Length: 468
Image 1 (cartoon, rainbow, N blue to C red):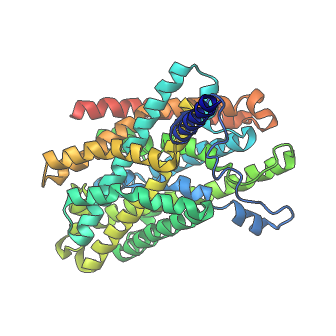
Image 2 (cartoon, rainbow, N blue to C red):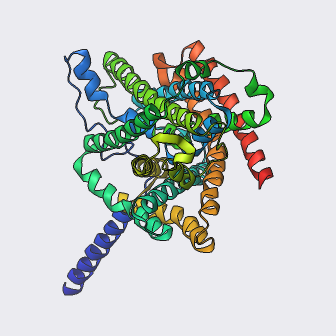
Image 3 (spheres, rainbow, N blue to C red):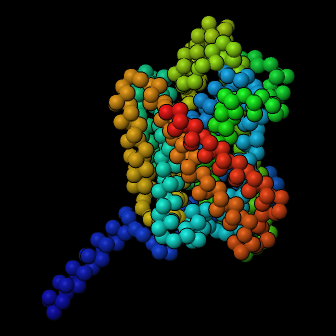
């Protein structure tokens, strides 16, 4: 009897230990809701007016838009203006329209199906293919992380004169900040990211205002120019802008966070309303991203075209903004500080979306469930390791470290087809989407955009490796 009781206690203890391990690290054959801790956590008023309803749905779009204005896009946009004046504004416009189309499809997929893009892709593939896709997408998120780490670390150095290696370590500790934000609620995260984006927008709007761009030339830049196709350098930079605009992790993220609003999927009217207002929110926020990227290119054109078109690094831009010989009478330490503040805001806001995307693809592709702190720590360690190695090996040579940004775009290019092709297929499927499947014109527009993006990214990959 005593032996039986002892055996029972040992079994209970063993079960408890197994349970604790499962809480930390578990594979579930049956996947749960996407981002379960925030899925359907925000109530939507039933009989509210247009503006109140739109306010309730406003938020996910800003998290998506952050990916389109992260530090990885800055150099390309400013270099485009510095080298070719305002002519590449049309490329930014086209890129933004493609992004709006794809992100609207991503949000609709999540709202209608109740699953994110990673979950649906895993359902339609084998375990091995799912694991392979997870590796590819995880590399893309790591690549995004690298751009954020480098941008934030350089901003910290510029603002506080802290060595780059220390700035990298400080930036890597943002996992603690994110854990605190997650406990505050998803709406708080949306508000904080919106504030950081507002800082970026206001900083560059102010600097562009001071730079005095020629309005007629700016407006003309949004109309296509034949030079883009005939000038090889301009074509390559154009491909860089288009190819790096659509972030694969944003497509996974959009299909998930569109589900943070509580929607009765058995009510077609409720689903239709959710799609409508989520799309409006997405388009508004991506318009802000379009404005920010336009401001970056306009700033590069107004200040550096014809004089210092070779400027292409964060440090160079920071120094140039305070050098009166380069930017004239508007030069001041304030402009440089504002640039660094915007760079830091961009890096920190982007890291939040990278964290959420990492959780989505990990749980969706391989059904691996682990606490957010553990998942974030793992992803961050994998991302920061190559940056630290480069920082130590190329100590004092920031140009070499910034070259990592170029290589990070290669991983994004490789991952993009694995996200965009399933997205178009699923949203065009009557079986998955029912009456909310893509209309004919949307379907064909999406496939054309897909082919263009895939071809451009393949070209960029080949050119990047050829250059190095």
